[in-house]
Image 1 (cartoon, one colour):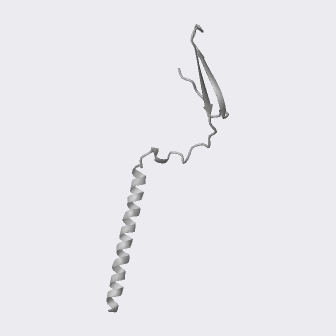
Image 2 (cartoon, rainbow, N blue to C red):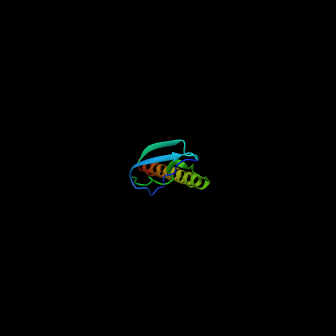
Image 3 (cartoon, helix red, strand yellow):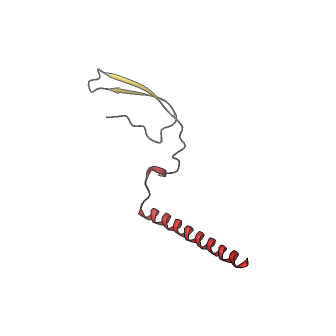
Length: 83
């Protein structure tokens, strides 16, 4: 069984003492609890994108590609008629 430090532990220096059932063996350890600021950004990169996110991203890329193509084709047609 391991030692557990709760997330609400106050920052500071602590001593840990562990004894066996008979009390003959004793182990000690020193540790420091550092002040925390909480997590940064939640899940972040710990999850891969799902099907919904991939579909939305693909749709946005396709829309941008089609819009850019239409814009360039329209510009060429307008510029080509003036010469």
